[in-house]
Every structure is written in structure tokens, then in C-alpha cells.
Image 1 (spheres, rainbow, N blue to C red):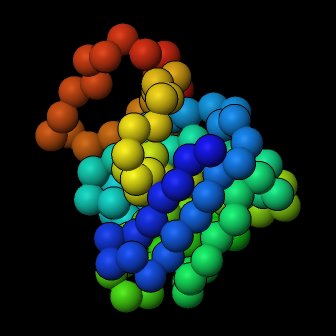
Image 2 (image 1 turned 90 degrees about the vertical axis):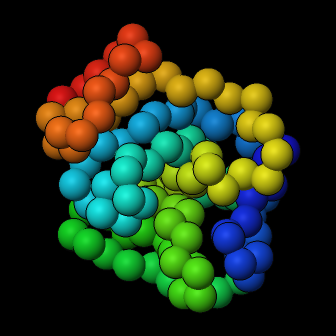
Image 3 (image 1 turned 45 degrees about the vertical axis):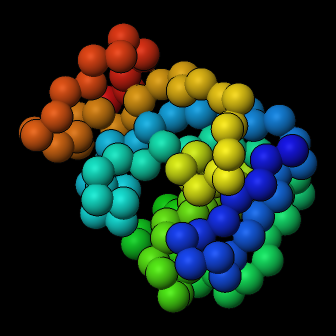
Length: 123
């Protein structure tokens, strides 16, 4: 089980299942929301429980993002009509035991950094 929270502690979540994938997203929206790139893992929605005042924000019709309305932590991402929910790896309290598997939307990455970890990159 993984436990996570936002920076101010108003939102807590528990992941009961084994994450099905991990990635770093370099798309423009994730870069603007996080200030760099967003690392996440995902599970079926029924394997994560969330307490606290999550504000859901849709930057496009394709997905919604869950953020803390107090501290602004970008915690969750969910594609429209998907039954999985991605959660921020940086919000996990303590070690995750996970390893990144890929980078996505690398064609949109910022010009101020390189991706040098040799993981697969999806443009």
C-alpha cells in the first residue's frame, strides 16, 4: 500500500493496488502545472481512496487534473472516460518501491533540460 498527501496535508490518498505503469510526462500542460515534468503511476480507480477537498480542473476535454485548492499540489490525472487514475509519485509519503518505465510527450519537453536516463521516450 502507498500513502500520499499534498504539501499542506489537507488531501490524503491511499493506493491499495499495484501500480500498472510509471512515467514522466513532458507535455506543455503538465510542465505548466508542475513547473517541470510530472512523474506518475496509475491504478484502477477503485484501488485508490482520496480524502480531502480535491479540486478537479479540466485543461482540455481529454482529461481532468486533481489539485489541492489550498497549496496547489498537482496530485491526480484522469483521462476522460478512463477507469484508471494517475497519481503523483512525488506526493507519496516515503519510499515508493517503484521505478520509472518511460517518458511521454517528449516532443513537447522544455529546451532547458536533457533526458539522459535511457528509458524509452514517446514523442
